[in-house]
Length: 127
Image (cartoon, rainbow, N blue to C red):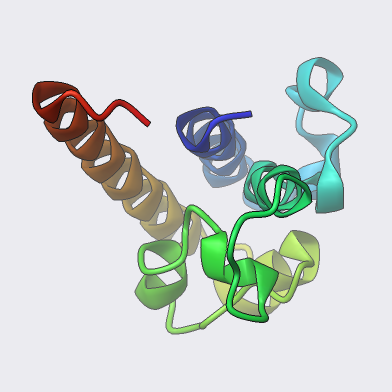
């Protein structure tokens, strides 16, 4: 799974949570297409795949979460604590506004990642 794929799947999940604010993330119909994945979270799955390939994490695997610096800053939390379901209930509190904020943060992460990919391609350093 690429970072972009993780973010795109995560966006689909959070947009559904936005539309269904009282639903559990485990009720998302998209899981039929994407499970199994770590913590039932696309970003955790990306993190696990990257750390198994030897990615540098500086002692905390969440340091390579595609949402770090976007969503976690946006909601005033450093990490989701590997449990997006409790994070969702604890921090977002099942509000459409909170879930919408996550969607906006994910969109920003996707936009920045696409810019970085284009910059690398122009430089001939596709990663």
